[in-house]
Amino acid sequence: MSKPLKLGFVGFGEAGYHIARGLRHAGLNEIGAYDIHTHTIGRGEKIQQRAQDAGVTLCESNEVLATSCDILLSTVTANQAAEAAKQTAPYLTARHLYADLNSVSPALKQSIAQQVEARGARFVEIAIMSPVPPHGAAVPMFLCGEHAPTLVALLAPFGMNLEVISDQIGAASATKMCRSVIVKGLESILFESVLASVPYGADERVFATLNETMPGIDWKKLAGYMVGRVIEHGERRARELEEVAATLEAIGVEPIMTEAIVRRQDWGASLNLLPEFGGNPPEDYRVVVNAIRARLQKESNQNEPTAQP
Image 1 (tube, one colour):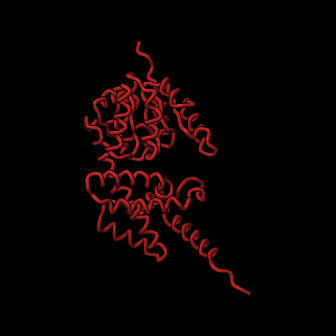
Image 2 (cartoon, helix red, strand yellow):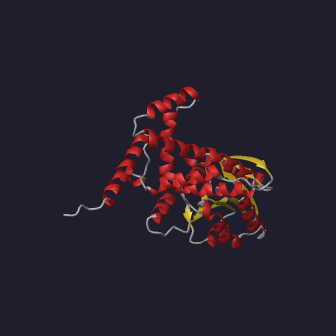
Image 3 (tube, rainbow, N blue to C red):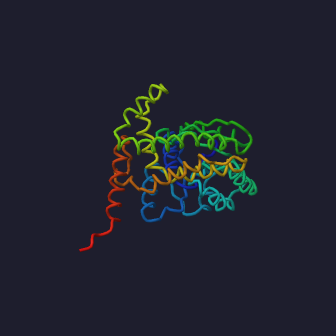
């Protein structure tokens, strides 16, 4: 009788939580996680609540996680992927499969692979190709690397949607990076468009003409969804796009558009509007625009010089 599969998450944010929850419901019973913010005020409470909801055991260190799990999935923020691998690598052995799911450049994936393989462990590159909610563990993923088929054989029975596209590390992230320029760019363009069109009452006609020019897309509905995504995930998206910029620069392409997308995503995140909507972005982009206008007007009034008597 084969021993139960033991899987661990390095980092337990939104992606890790939703994937773990889906795996648990599909029958994978032994799931652990280690997150450096488990005991951080505010963030820690959310991590602990999510772990309890998903039936995940929180570990107190990378070492404990690696010791107790055979498969490790790195689901940290893009700018922490290298550090997460560095902290975990000393505890990896030949029995481990280490998969990096983070949105980082092909070069960084290759660097992480070297760290992992230097310990005798097996590395798999994974690119998540769609928002994790509402798909959960079934979110489409592209895999690369010599050991990718092994990971598919272990995890596909639990409902994961895994497609091996190459044995070359970096191909999956390159696919996602180039796609992200379009997806995150469209988010930023629609965001910028409604910021300007709503004050003039022009947004309805803007989207009506777009429906005629490019049929098959409900542009108004798409704008509501995408503007909400910027408000909710802009900071993370900006960091991902910085990795895209690094990817482009590495092959001699100046990231002119990508750098502009980073600025707009960062600006949207800097407003910190999500608490005003109870933690969930509204589906109506006009609600977001009006909240931004009210915020900016309030700040403008506060900065006006006080009239002298």
